[in-house]
Image 1 (cartoon, rainbow, N blue to C red):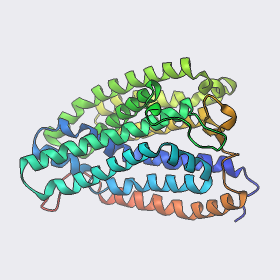
Image 2: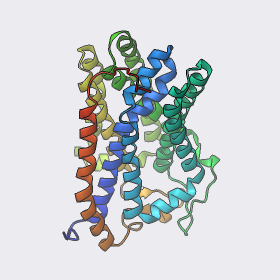
Image 3: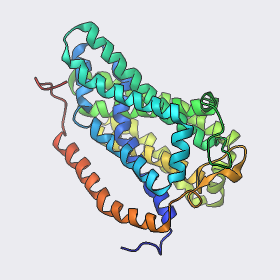
Image 4: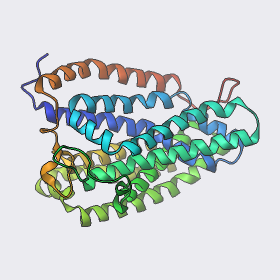
Length: 343
């Protein structure tokens, strides 16, 4: 099919946002479960925690791979700049994701308490580090990074860990912890369920404090992120939906509607990514302090022919990814039950 009559650059910007939103919603809760893992005190509780995500955690990461592949195909200059400029951060993220996987698989291989404690700590720490790195990367994209005329990152690794980026990183950890606590509440029952229910309000409070602080810092230090919302008041619907979704979470938890609480959390996460996308558009990588070197959806994209070709592949491929995701969650619906085959 020929889609060249459309703004393919904008379509791919939105599509990549959708893919990363899917990753945030799905892998977000299992990263959150990992961040909360050490709050489980007994071996039984920790096994329930791991097995709540056991059937789905690796499938969730398909969305990260798909999003990264789409970024490479549609905006190769952006992919190259971020992969080289954030090289050590990317390696840290990959190592964290690898250690999460190893921890899940190795924990149950030996009954020694010391063995299991080591992998429990590894699972939790790697989950927090991976989430923090993702948030720090997001914060740097909002602030902008120093780029040269050759589109190469001109800063240092330590320069990525500026106060604003760290604040966004901590906010991301808080968001995923809230999301993970809701998911655990949905998947558990009995004493563990009641224990996790008690965590949710604290996680929500932690997230709201971080979110409010980040919002104020953004409006003060990066006011251009709000410019499009001032020019187009209809866009204010996005933060409104975000606030209503967050406010609805404790209401649904109070009434015992855990699935609706999780869906509200998903809506809030999607709205947050939409706020980010609207704020930075048309930039993908903002150059700071020399904005003329910024990478945008128009100067950093592939050719129109390649964008059209990849969109045809996406139209065919994305429904398969969605179908796989829906099927897995349908098959493994219900509460966690530990068996001889469990982690």
